[in-house]
Structures are given as structure tokens and as C-alpha cells.
View 1 (spheres, rainbow over the protein chains, first blue to last red):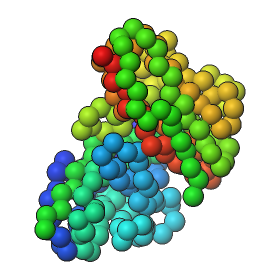
View 2: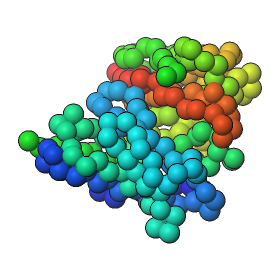
View 3: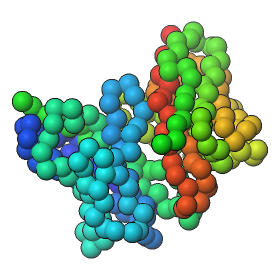
Length: 115
Length: 117
């Protein structure tokens, strides 16, 4: 079955610094990959998704991620962190041909942005 | 973009009672809806997949008699937690897909926080 592993349950960056949240996937067939953000007591907001088109995916709020098959990675980056970026981030994977849009989520990474 | 609405957003109930959570797709028809459960500070775990007009498919370890899912229309799915106990306290999130296949889009509700006393 497909799965994702998020390295680092907590990441702390200074405001203005580069944000890098790591996600590695495991799948026997080409997957669809997603990054979601969750603010306290709220649902999920899609940041971006990879669906087998361009490997560099640009999302909302200045985030982007690159699908690297050789590294089985889909790391999330943002050049300059804002205080409002502090939240929980989830990487997720699915195989649409077999699972539809039933997502398997990583354990999440809590991003802290310091002044 | 498409909107998925959950109701109630928060519910507190006594142990032994049943609670129903609704998930509605407001401006599109959802052929497939998914129910997730999220414990505090943890990830989302898929509970079940429901397709309109058919029985839900439950993930391993999820009690189908305890978590009743009904997807009676293309815009509404309900999750009923029967005979709730404190260990059922959790954040429940639904998502809806416009298509069961790869051409569909996926949208999440705002979540419903259940607290069982």
C-alpha cells in the first residue's frame, strides 16, 4: 500500500527564512501527492498537488514542491516564511486508479515561525 | 472553489448517546465521500469511503456498527456515532470527490469536534 513519511514532527524557522518540510513516499506505482495545511480546530486546506504532470508544482501562499522519483520525495518549500505560515502541514498520497481520492496522510509537521 | 460543509462544527454529548454529523457538498455533486478521524496532535486516519446509493466501505479496524455512514444523495453524507463513549472523542473530517476516478477533485470539510463526556 502507498504511504508517506514526514521527517521532523516539528520545524522551527525564523520569519523570512526558507521553509523546507520533508515528505518521502512509498508506492509501487506512480502516485498522486498532496500537501495540506491545517490551522487549529479547522479542516484542511490544499496547498498543492502533484498528479503526474509537471514535477515542480506551485501552490498557494508562495509554496511549491518538487516531485523527485529518484529520491521518492515531495518536499515542500517556501523561500521566505511569514508568521501566518505557522500551522500543521500534512503530506498525503493516493493511487487514483485503485483508491480514488482516499488519501493516506503522513503524521504531520508542525511549523513554528519565530520573529 | 467547491465547498464542503460539515455540521455541527462542535458537539458535546453524554456517554451512551448517538451523534450525527452531516457532510454536505454545497455547489457540486459528490459521487464519493470520505470520512477521516483525527486525534489530538495526530494525523488523519481514513475511516470509510462512501459512494452515493451504496454501502460504505470501512477501513480495517473501524467498527461499522458503531460508525454508521449513510450517503443517500449526491450532496449529503452522514456519520452517526452510536452509543458514544469518551474514547470516541475526536475531530471528524469529511472530504468529497466530484468523481471516484483520477479526473475528480477533492474537497475537505471544516471538521466536527466531538466530545463525549
